[in-house]
Image (cartoon, rainbow, N blue to C red; front, side):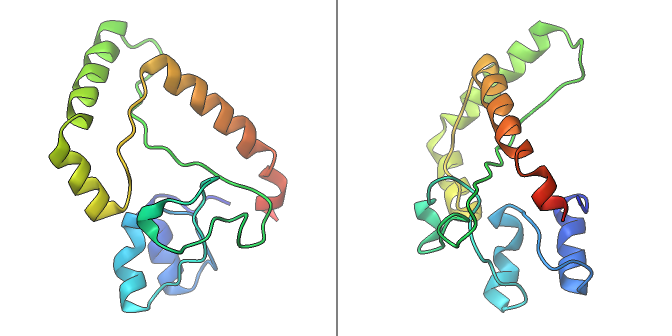
Length: 139
């Protein structure tokens, strides 16, 4: 069951209303450092070297992986010029070395940029992969 945004998941975890949640490392790192939360595994199919020895879900004994990319999306029917312009802005930002450094240091993530068509293809693949675990996760 989805419990909402990262902030809502963290509130529910800290209050003991849920036992675990999938959230970005940047959202929980402070709680890990204080000992209020324990990070069990990372969701990707391969380890993020910025997270040290933290195993993947598969390495931790669960035969699955879950990618959680950040995306910028627009309502269906948005003018393609607007989408293209935003894609150009995002690409320019991701090419700034200071942005990459801030993202790595603050959130332990590397910068990855995909154009619109590649991103749609990738998200479609992730959704297909994720849906095979739907029933297991709901239990």
